[in-house]
Length: 190
Length: 336
Image (cartoon, rainbow over all chains, first blue to last red; front, side, top):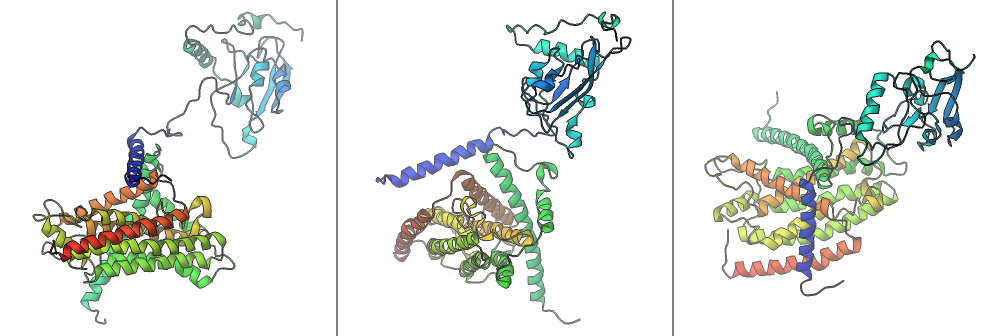
C-alpha cells in the first residue's frame, strides 16, 4: 500500500468522496417501481402470457390445426379441433379449436407457437403476472386465453397499428383478413 | 399497604417510562435504518405496512414472536437463555445516567446524575460484551463462536481508544458528571467537538466498532459467519439481541452528543429550558443518521486490518492527543 506523507489526507479524501456518492443516491429518484400498486408494463415484444385472437368480426382465428402443439418444445399445448357448424361457425374455414389449453407451468415462453400459427391466432402478450395457488388453475383454457370482446380486439388492433414506429412497415398479415362473407359460404361438406 | 419510599417509586416510574421510550425509539430506528438504507441504494424501503411502512416494526414484532424458539441440542441452556437478556440489560443500563436535557431549574432530566457518570457508562459498555460473547459461546456452534471471539477482541481493543478519547473531555470539563460536562460546554459556548476534534472523530469510529456496526460488523459478518454470534438464535431471543444492538446505537450517539456536542445545549435554551430535550434528540438523530450513512457507504474491514487499525492507528493517535491536551491544560489552559 502506498503510504506517502499524505496518506491520511488521501484516505480522508476517499472517505468523503464515498460519502458524497452515497448521499447523492440518497436524494436521487428511486429506481423502485411500486409494482402491484403501480402496474408495470413490459415492452410490447416481451413474451408473456398467451392470447388467442379473433378476427375483427368476432370469429376466432384458431383453426385447430395443432401446429402450435407440434412446435411446442415443452409439450405445453393441447389442441383438440372440431368441425365448424356451417350455420354458426366459430372460425372461418372448416375447423376450429374446440379445446385449447396451455399449461403455464410447462410453458417456457419461447414463442414458437406464435411462429408456427398459420392464422396468427396464438400470440404472446406482455402480461407476466400469473402466479396462483394451485397447479390446476395454471392450465389456461380458452376461457382464459381467448380474447373476449371483438370490439376490444378491434381497438387493440388499431392501437397497435398506431403504435408502430414510423418508417417501419408493418408486416403483411400472414392470412388475408377474412371477408365477412366467409361464414355465409360454408366450405366443407360436413 | 406497605410503605414504599418515594424515591424508589420515582425511580421505578421514570425507568419504566424511559424503557418504553427507548424501546419505541429502537423500533423506529430500525425502520428508519431500513428506509434510509433503501434511499441510499435508490430503493424505497418498506412501504406496505401502514402509511409509508410506519407499522413495519409492529409487523416485525408479531412475526418474531410467532416464530419457533429453538435451542441447539448441545447448547449451554442457562447461558444461552441468559445471554440475550444480558445484552439488552447492559444496553438499557446506560440510560440510567444520560441527561436528556435540563429542567427549568437547571437540574438534569435523568434518572440519576452520579458524579462518576462517565465511568458508569464505560463500565456498562464493557459489560455489554458479555451478552455477545456468552451468546456466541453457549450456542455450541462454529459461526457463533467465531463471531463472539471476534466481538470480544474487537470490543476490548476499541474500548481502549474510546476511553482515551473521552479522557480529554473530562480534563477540559474538570468533572466526570455528565450533566456537569454539558454545563461546562454551555458555559464556554463551545462544544468540545471543536477544540477536541480528534477525540470526537476517534470516539465516532470506536462507537461504530463498539456497537458492531458496519464497517466494523465483523461479529455478525453475514458473508462470512452466517449471522455471527446470534446465528443459532430465533424468535424473541434473536429479537432481544436486535433490541440490544439498536439501543446501543442510540446510547453511543447519546454519549457522543453529551461529551462533544453540548448535550441539550443550543439556541434559545436559556429562555425555553424544555427546548434542551429537543436539541438533544436532534443531535442524536443526526449522529444516528451518520451511522447509517457509514453503513451504506463503507464495505466491511478485513479482520486483521480492523485490529491493526485499532491498535496501531487509533490508540497511538488517541494517546498522543491525550498528552497534548494534558500539556495544554497543565500549562494553565482552559478548564471547567
